[in-house]
Image 1: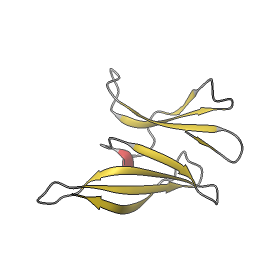
Image 2: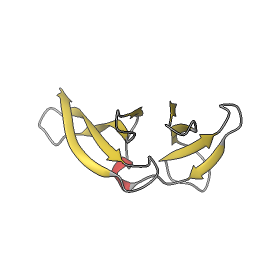
Image 3: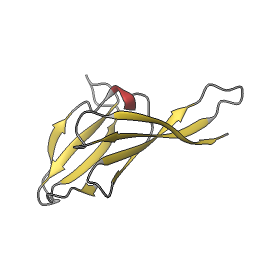
Length: 102
């Protein structure tokens, strides 16, 4: 959960096992941190097949999400990638691989 500069809370969730729905990263918003509204039920295809997503608010007010990424390698490694959005809702830019773990 992050708090945007306007005071709104953003909660990014990897929704899994919901009947009739794909396992996707979704966004819920709240003005008080108690009552949450579904903002979007599909954030971006960038986050398809991730098992975790961790959001941070940057100093300039953008949202960066770090997430796991399978790497094509002989050892079947996993990396940490990131994506950036000006508003935390859409316009996500894939920033690529940040770190690798084998």
